[in-house]
Amino acid sequence: MLDVDRAQGTKDTYRRELRVLVLPYFENFAIREVTVGRIELFLRQQRVQSYTRAKHSRTILGMILAFATRREIIPRNPMKETSRMKSPPHTPKALTSDQIAAIRVAAREWRTEDGRMGPRSDGQVRDIIEVMLGTATRIGEVLAIRQCDVDLDADPPRVSISGTLVVHNRAGVHRQEHPKTHESNRVIGMPPFAVEVIRQRLALLDPEDAEHLIFYSRVGTPLAPYNVRRTFREILRNAGLEGLNITPHSFRRTGATLLANELGMQAAADMLGHTSTSTTKAHYAEPDRTVKSGPAEVMQRLAPPI
Image (cartoon, rainbow, N blue to C red):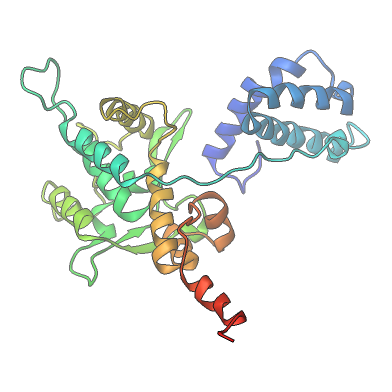
């Protein structure tokens, strides 16, 4: 955890996964007793629960064993001799137009009904959904947008993605001055529906306070991503979409799919801030299953009329 090249949020995640995933199994073993066989059994048990759990467990345990090897506590890293983990087949899944419509309606109506007990919705999660849908951004990136990041006078109106919200164990929620990766720094042209939402949000701010976040809590502090996700789950329940593995990240995959189908995979990768199209294709853009007439027309040339 002394690695200065890793973000504090990443270190916090590693600590949590070490405590939850690895220590319950290995806490009574000395480092020299962490053998290839014990690692194999451990990873098989984790894999039964999920591939992601096993993958994270392998990463954390591998880092510990690599450190012990460098310090000559053990002669070799047994993780290098364990079986490779094959990832399960994965096909990115975009939201359908009906699902998008249901989510938008449910978000607009959430906590607005007459006679409802408790505070009424301030509309922020509704607006966050609109901006995420129009920009294919991560939830932390949207919540980190400041007044100075927006240029509505440009053609097209645009937003600069130059930070993200992170949650540290001791420091709480704060804006990190760079997105997830260096390549994630980008400027995005916004569609009119997202521009209108941003315009309404800007009208609530002091024009002189350029650093003020577009989305913020009732006391002016950054919104916690986990609170937004919790509200989003309630909106999904009201929309009748609970249990379909839909998350705020689904808007990012949906945007990637539309862009890839209409403008090509490179345009989708650029919008998402990916260094190559391979990540976009493997994890974000749902394959286009539409049967095209073009290939059939080309193949017809093999058998011209006789």
